[in-house]
Image 1 (cartoon, rainbow, N blue to C red):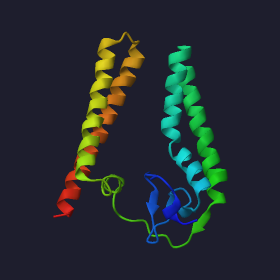
Image 2 (cartoon, rainbow, N blue to C red; image 1 turned 45 degrees about the horizontal axis):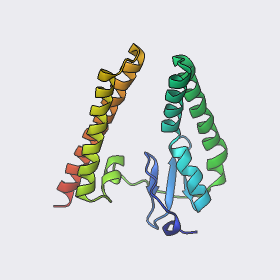
Image 3 (cartoon, rainbow, N blue to C red; image 1 turned 120 degrees about the horizontal axis):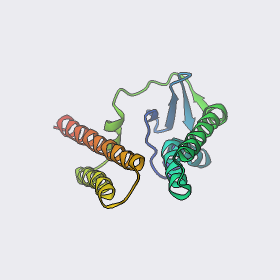
Length: 178
């Protein structure tokens, strides 16, 4: 099945489209490229690409429901490690290897903003900064313990940094399109 039949768009630090439009994952550990070539592989791959956010979300859920900080952190780390081991040891070797793959030199952020219209980029920037602001406001109006407050502040800072990175890529895109 060719890449045009795959629905959605997977982004990641090591995810590329080659000259033929195929979805390629470049494994930095063994320096090999793999072709995600059909819908079932694509669905599994997109889940593995989100293993870090899934693990973080699981950790937060465990912390909130069981009220045990270190147990939640441990559960999140355990799930991340298990998904990573399965991804690199089982899933990737089952994909077709792409020989002589040349990674594009453009950055992840440029690949993120390039297909988007200026309006969508601006809306994304505004929403990202609103999320950061809401995280800070949430800490101010809620009665969290100290560790949860620091985690919220750290998350708000990370979200804001991501927003600034998108702003930089947006201006770079505008400069390149002149």
